[in-house]
Image (cartoon, rainbow, N blue to C red; front, side, top):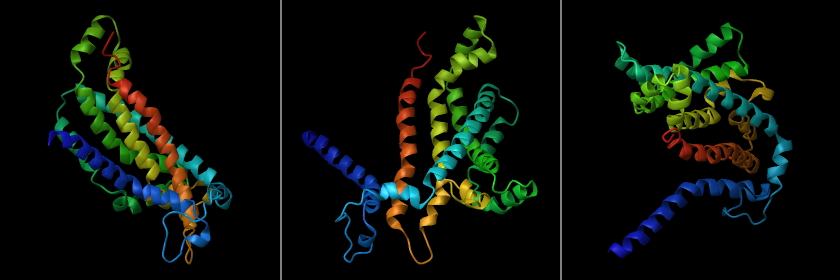
Length: 273
């Protein structure tokens, strides 16, 4: 039985990976089909004719480059705002036992239970009053606000796990509080910051409802909204729809590939002098 354990686990692992990857594989194969193969009966998964030009034509059929630029702008700015605001807030909460600390953390967690659609009308009316509809800044602020609580909650746990004795030793050596935060605390809390950045980036990149409500002009739409242009009333251009979806995955995959190294390095950063 012990000899069979490893092969069985390997087979189960491959099966789980295949189940998880299969929707993306079908999406990629559909993106490589010509339009006349999309509605064949019986349907085929593998294209009979590989239409690689779909990934080139889609850039001219729709302003994909503009959608990608808008998504990157909104996502990067919202993620930066979340980290800049969440780091000092989480550090203060982790290092100070003020009155109402526990209710505050519970309130932060409670805000994550509020769906954006529940307050969508109020958000729209507020930004309409200040004439910020169809404005990137409005979308950046809203996305940052909805992801701030989760980032604070994660970072509080990471900052709390760092021994205060390290900070006290650094202050005895003459380091300022900002120097302690920059040289000691932040390197040790690197995995937490990376985790907060990843969740915020992916959440903002995939956000649809808020972008659909606050952005109306085509030149300002993010990819999550612009991709719906391939869905018409009487026709759906599946080959271009899935090709754009594949293109939209690439930035997220690149971000994970870049951050993975920093995440592994952050586990030991600052631990050895």
